[in-house]
Image 1: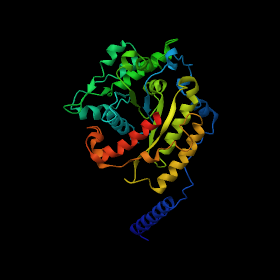
Image 2: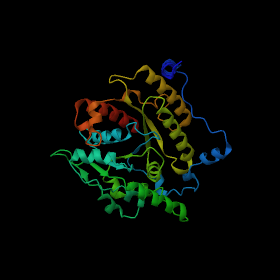
Image 3: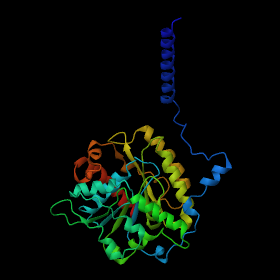
Image 4: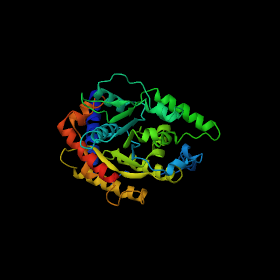
Length: 353
């Protein structure tokens, strides 16, 4: 038997095995959902049962209980689920007629995608960062606010939106602040953003703040959550993304009582969905599983049972939305995108009331 023949048979058998595997995956039962299971060894359990942010009890300032405009954090542990796109377009919807709200956008992701989108829409090429001042907490409130000048997208735009920018050096500043928090006794950094947003200078400049966070719990993420009134979680309705939303929620709920007890879950936005007109059955099933799990995680702070997943406010795959990413804001460029984010924005406003 020649080597060539053996190689050919081996290749054919490999192809058959691959086809069988793909068939099995495609026809596997929908009930075989991914579940997050803890590690078996105690050493790893000890490492992950408490995040590093839980190792020092937070010292919440008295202003934590004060009244301020809504502060909405858009976050998830999973990347690529549309957080930045939703933040930018929500900001455009809220600041445009007929809402005409004064909107403060904060880019807390060092990749700076939100900054690039907003600045691109405004025709600004300067992407220098300013959001780090909100973490450092050293600038007087009036000076800090000057680092977020009004964005004007049209000739007659009144500049209802302000933006604190981020870019790659932002991560270096975050790390330095984090090290300082770890090493300096009685040094608290978790509420620096809150102190700014609660100040009279800032409260006169915004009616709603929307914060875009990276797909992990960083110094900036903790500041955002510690200042926030509400959390919005975008997710794709698939087995790769759903576990990220669940794990993120479980981590937050563990920290919530001590660090940010007023945080409420506004809802989960199905994003980058498969069809333009509605959710596919496979997406509905995934989201139903997530809804059930999150009602267990957020039993008293969700808006109401059964309404955690914002099914009617889904954001579908769209070429116009994809084309605008990092260059502009789809809501202000395309009629169909405007409909999509107006629908989401209306649902967000209803839930904030």
